[in-house]
Image 1 (cartoon, helix red, strand yellow):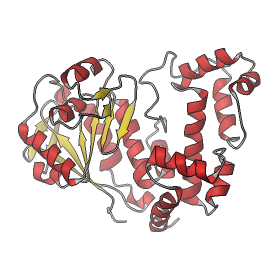
Image 2: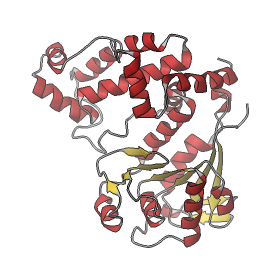
Image 3: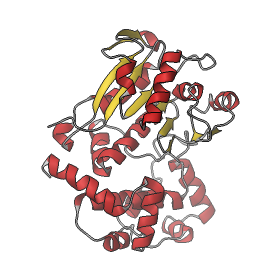
Image 4: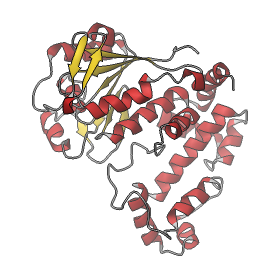
Length: 325
């Protein structure tokens, strides 16, 4: 299968976050074209070609220099461990040139500071690790820093909070480039949690595993099977024998979202899968997913994905044919 997806440059520089580097390479750097029909063409790019010492004593080889990165469709910036220091000017120049050419720029954790020093955060909503968010906001006051979001896709500038949020953002990018089914299949292959929305909080107030007997996980599974039905907070609360206030509080603690936000996300995901794999009309999909009307579905897709349902279907129909599905 061909590697004819977007060109990706993972930037490697002294002290960069080794966890950030490794995780994005697991998603973008491994050849999954046999599963998805095509995949990313990914290169590691250093300030100059050769070995690069990341943090934690990890050394990687960067076969390519910044000239290769400048031509990429997506540039990935791992954590920058010297937040107050200005990164090498050659790196900043490469990011500016790539952005002006139309590339997407994605940072993980404190990699957002590199984007800030390059002047790419001005008048944008961005995030970073919550502990470093106040410093990011003070150094780059023209940026709107959200310290709670897992990740933020602000057009061609994408930023993620610490470490595992970089995986969430990477899956978000895969979802946009190759579809919801591809992102879900990749998450399963890597034994990842799957989809966490960028609007979800960086941390929640409960352990990752709910208490035994907690009815909310079963409620979530049940709702995914009944998205077409209309539900109010009161009716959901009655189903699990809670007050609406208690359900809202426990829902937020478990998922990092309100029930309304969670349902909206699940309905969009279901619509994406139906568009990718079937031939139902937009009107039928809107009804099946609980989104309601075709106009609501078109509005939701343009707001969340920046594309119409018809264009989304056309994009992924060709990928499905390539993969032999």
